[in-house]
Image (spheres, one colour):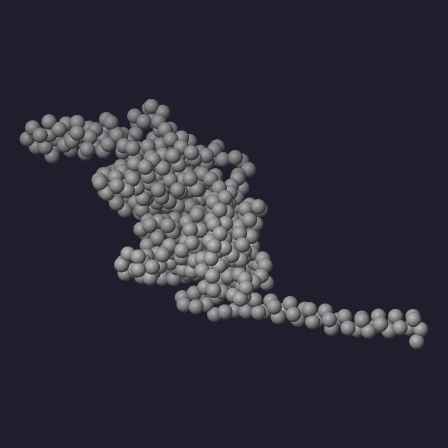
Length: 512
C-alpha cells in the first residue's frame, strides 16, 4: 500500500469514528445535566423545588440558569440556583436557595454563587429576587462560610441604593441567613411555612430558658404584625412569588430608570359618587380611609393596580403602591379605623422607610391626612417616639420625588407637620373644606385656654361644646392656612383626583 493509500485509509477510519466519539460527549453532558436537574421531592410543607420556584417567578420559559454544573464538594450542588429571566418582559436576576442540598446551608461556594448573581444585577442594573430557604451558615465551612455571608451582606448594602431587592421567605431563614432579607427592600413570607430568626428554639431555650416554637420566635405572624421585619404574609408559595412580581410591576428596574406607566383607569364610579359622604363631620367618628382612596386612585378591577405593604404592622397608617393616571405612586395615609389613625414609634418608622423607598425610585408620594397626633405616654417615649418621629421629618425633607398632601379631616400639632406638610417640602398641599388644622384639637385647646371659665361654669359641658365649636370655626378651619399660602387651596373631596393628576403632570418629566 502506498503512502497515499495509507493516509486515505486513516482519514476514512477517523471520519467513521468521529460521530461515535461526538455522540459519547453528548451523552455524557446529557447525563450530567439530568443528574444535576433531577427533581428531588420537596420536604415538609414546601410545594416546589428551588429551580421550579425560579421558573414560576419569571415569565414562562425565560429562566436561564447560571453555572448549573457547579458543585460544592460532596454535597453535590452549590445549594442555590441562580440565573435570570424576564418579568413582564423586563430582565430580573434570581437566587433561589436549594433546601435539597445540605438543607440550603450557606457554605463558601453557596456564597460565591449568590454573589455572582448579585454582581450581575448590580453591574447591569436589574432587580434581584432572593428566594430564601436556608438553615444558616454551613458549620463545616467555618470561617469561609462566615466570610461568604459577609460578602453577600456587603453587596446587599451596595445594591440598596441602585436596584430593587426583594426577599421571598419560603422556609427557614436562620442565623446569618436572616440578615440578608433585612438588608433588602421588601420581604414576603408564607404563613405556617416560613420562619426568620437569629437563634432557633433550642438555642433560645438553652440560653434564656424560654420555651417557644419556631413560629413564635420568627414566624410570618410575628414579623408582619409585631416586628415589622417582613412586609407581606401570604398563604402559599405561588402567592408569594406572584406578590414579588406584582411589587416589581410598580418599580423601575434601577434607580433613575423609567417607571412602568400603564393606560390610566378612572377611579371607580361608585366610589367617586360616595367620596363626598365618606368622611364624617365629627372628628371622633371613624371611617375607612380605603374608601377615600377608592374614589381618587386609578380603579383596581383586577387586583394588579394596588399593593398594600405592612398592612398589619402599625395599622394606624397605610403604606401602599398604587397608580394615579397610569403612573406608579406611593400612598401614605392615616387609617382612622385602626387606633384613630394616630402616629406612634412603629408607624413613624413604617412611613419614613416607605417614603425613602419611593423617593429613591422617583415614585410620587401622595399623603392623605387624618391624624389626631402622636400617641402620648411612657411606653411610647420609652420606644423612642421622638427619634422615630423625626425619621418621618427627615424622609419627607429628603424626598426628591413629587410630594402631594391633602388633609381630609384633621391634622393636629407635630403630627400635622410630620405627615408631609408644606414646610417639609411638599410640592402641593390641599385640605378638604371640612378639615381642621391646628396646634391641638378643639377639646384639648379649650381645656387649656379656658380652664378657669370651665371650672366656674354652671354647665361646664355646654360651655365646653360652645367654646370648642368657636375654636373649630375660628382657629382650626383650613381657610387660615390657605390665606397664608401654607395650603394651595381648599377643595371638595371630588376635586382631589384631578388636582393630583394635574400636579403630577407638571411635576413629572414628559418622558417619564
